[in-house]
Length: 235
Image: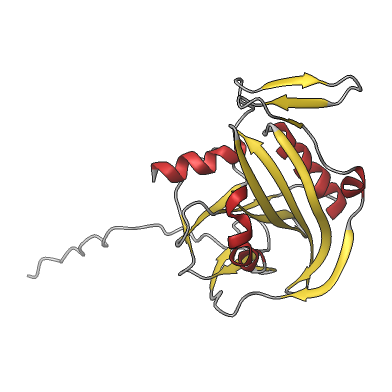
């Protein structure tokens, strides 16, 4: 459990002070690592940041994704295979995160389902908000891919990006969806050197995203037994 808490906390961790940022002669910010290597803080191609292509291939949930987890805040949820992923408890303080998952076969694969009742107008606006949030909390960032997809008849934004935090390289993929009362996202990530071997399993989880009525929490009020009825004295 401690390993899960430490690994998932990396996603939202602040920039590590032991890593130094510097500026190149042409004004680009770089990060210097302890092993004397360096990377641009934002190494994304400008065209990748500005262009969102459309993938016309339809995506559907996997046949073995039989368990439905519903959002408590927006009309969305996702199907997953409980034999492949399990819900874990973490110390996340973010109110946007509703579920955290780990892969049962590989404890280094994690997934987050998040939602927020925010009036985001377009998926492009949502992309900008997500990228801004991620870049604030990592040392190095690179957007590799952004495209519109149709997942279970929903129009979603699919993104793939790399990030380095606390000296560790991660690969992320996620699907982002606008609902009638906000937005939701499902994002999965692992160490960069393990991504390709686990990509299929990770994408299967993303393809479980569906539109569904939000989970309703029913308040149960417990009451004690009724008071005993008094008996009239017989004459």
